[in-house]
Length: 530
Ligand code: FE
Ligand code: CA
Image (cartoon, rainbow, N blue to C red):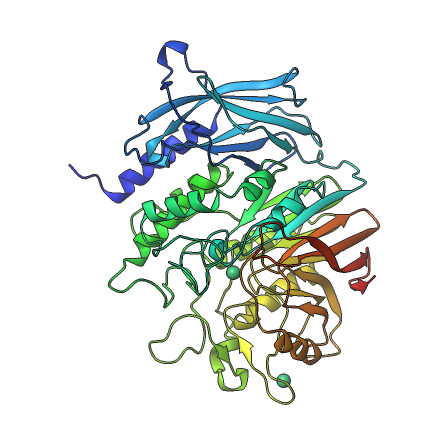
């Protein structure tokens, strides 16, 4: 008898919760198949750390070409140690990898000490996973001298190699902020750099295969094994330009049930990232079938002692549809704000009412140090028409200006110290001041913005970017001709950011260099180029 979608969903949630907690499974009940291949081909990862816990992730793969190659339930061992030799093990246990969650595991290891590095690995019979390194965050209220994070986004498999991660792994970063487009749902690209994927991702199985393709990349695996990641998603983890429950325009021919497509994409996202099971259970209130039952609450806060707080936002899942797209239109457009009366409708939201309220509460108790907003796209206004008149891209915050003004008003009303917005999506580096009112050139800055370029996805034309920088003086730097990532060093007195770029992202052995570097001092929302 077929179960209802919501009953399936409840069962998944129960399994996810059980998998996250520390289990003691009597040896007699272990399910440890004898495997003739290495099941850890997707590597390991850690993420969502706080001061005393972190999520450890892996996913077991069946032998290539063997269908039903893994039992429904497999018992894995895991260990966390203070040293790489695993001579000082501080936590160990078992967990179960289940077919219902693609044999992924998400172990939430607690009882760790704050602000220190650990090493971890999984075991399955004689098979041992690659070793991962992870760390906890500083204790609440602790003085912290420095923190280094790397920010990255947009890694299209068939448009380049992930050489950016090979270089990032040598930067000694404490955490990665991944800001969206971890996968792309497209079947292919013109002049692909490497083969695959070959078909649209539509079903749960398609998205699982897409993550397995991307995560087969050794440089990406190595960076996941290097330090814990915080992640949010953008549109391509589901479909180009989707908005909340509304599909975008691109996709395979024929009918696609978008609610089902999104639910499968979200489930595969959970299965392949080091997320806490709470991102699923917090969606319980939405149970009842349809797309609302597939909610995943991936936005959240992390505190780095007294040095900084991070607010990771989800501006895809709850946003209102794109504005001024014409009759029956969907998705992104360049729009003329003078001809788009609905643009400033205060009812339009980028984050949704509930996330906006959560962010308002969080920002009423901000960090005394730096306050980092991690989100998926360009935050500042970007007029794309040189000279008189304006042209705005309605997929970014420029399509939701009332919501953007509410966010900057919240920063000001709460006197939030030292706001720093990180973003991605546009495949270009943009650096500048966040303005209280982008329509008023004299409006004072309320924070700073670093929107990063893509890891491998192709960028725009070079001449376009220079022209747009001149038209938008609240930005101090822009570049669209390089792929790469950013490295941000926080201390109580200053923030230093280096834009690290590849000479050629279509080469596996690409070299890296610093394109530009910037300093922001506490108490002054101004970006100074070094
Ligand atoms: Fe992208
Ligand atoms: Ca203009």
